Length: 248
Image 1 (cartoon, rainbow, N blue to C red):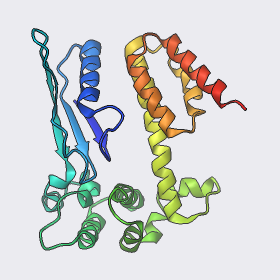
Image 2: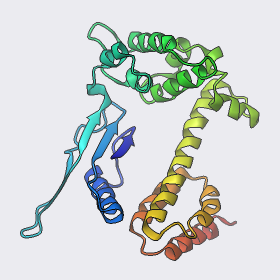
Image 3: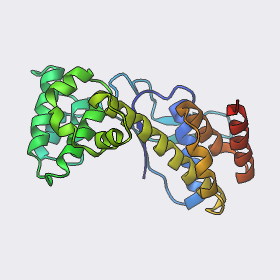
Image 4: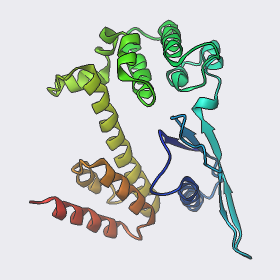
């Protein structure tokens, strides 16, 4: 099972090409069927995703199909009614009942989330995860008005940045959390991809070099380059060249 989570459309590389690359790599690595799904968070994302990669060359035809899931097309009330704890933080991004506007829907989702049976110590993190996801489409002032700020301030993501000396309030805490989480996710994805391609030996040695790269866009570029690189040493040279360019 392969899940690709997208807040917006894939711009640099069209999604069908990306999925074809992932599927090919998965088949080569594991020798098993790959079931790919792309999940779009924003209502304007994925509208033109065909759900397949097609190479229409005579005698070399290739088709790779995958599932396209747009959260805005899922009935959010069904998720709330079933009290699906793992999906409720995503519910504000789903389709609301016809009689509710977006702000009323967010408030309704939060009210249900607050009634879910979760340890009291985990409730701030649960609501903070909903706040971070809501940030994809909702105005932050609305999020702050509806989700109790005193609860969010107890969440691990906000506490972490407070401990690091970031005192710009909950908005900056959440935004920084998204940025840091994205960096860590991309770095781990690069390392896992390299380990799949070249075995684990030497891969973790590259982690400090990747962690020194603050530019999120550059990390995304390196993730794409890792997909096509022919050896671990070539990728290491790419990182060294990146360090040299960064030196004053």
